[in-house]
Length: 371
View 1 (tube, one colour):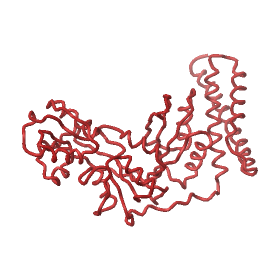
View 2 (cartoon, one colour; view 1 turned 30 degrees about the vertical axis):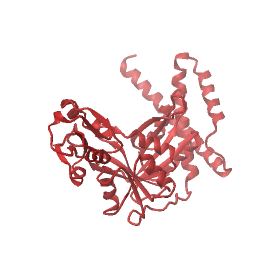
View 3 (cartoon, rainbow, N blue to C red; view 1 turned 120 degrees about the vertical axis):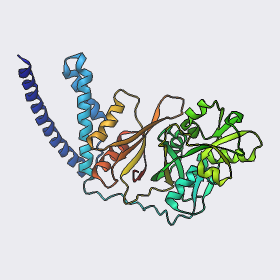
View 4 (cartoon, rainbow, N blue to C red; view 1 turned 45 degrees about the vertical axis):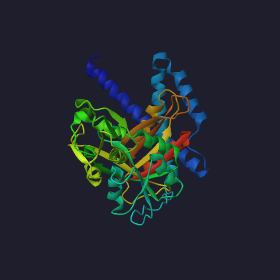
């Protein structure tokens, strides 16, 4: 046979496969109707393994067993999602209160006045007083305990990447993301008095700010020391008689009466940081179009592939994927996923139910309008 004949043969087989796939999905819908009527869960672990074992036995070619197992695993994952859609059809929408940023009694940030977190907070809550805490964890704890209504924390920078401590604390505390806000970061090098850069003994700032200005620091041979926050680093410099400096925002430097030694020192001219607003309770704004979840997947072959398939089948765009170590002595990780969708969307309901049924560790950690 020539190439055209071979391809025509493949096209004929593909048509047959598609026809059989559609028939299988019709039968799966019948299964979903039965499970709905008898209040049965979609996930049947024993049944799934039976199907895979049977397919491997029928393959007849050791080299193709993994391929056929992957094929039928994907088919069954698609089936479970469609079954969940059927079962959840007509179910009432989730009911949550909307965020009340204007009516918030108390709002917390990490650091001190002049910090970038305060700038982010003001963009949401306006010109008001904020409660400042020494650490990110103090903000999480205050929200979790009901001490404050909302907390504002950095989660990602366009130059230096993710703020890992924020993700670790999201896993530790039962709080929810209710809003996302992005602000421009304009770093400067500031000191208590004017001095040549060669005189500076050390530069203090938050690790993210130091990473964002790495080229400038290295070029000028400046030693660095990590500090909890850019604004508190500036505060330390102003309280010291040593020849030290801080990387902070221009607004912070001017507010504290510092001398700006160098401006626009970030590695890239467009330097943006994404902040999240967290609340003790799940709150859903009307314009929310993104969902954030936290999960752990089994340490087995193909588990990540199967996870990503669920979002592809449901026509959802994955906006962000982050991973953090679970810190239990293993090398297992928690995944943090942001994906497009609204909680009222049948596809979102189906995938959330699918994840909840199939994973031992799963939690929806918020929904917000993606900036």
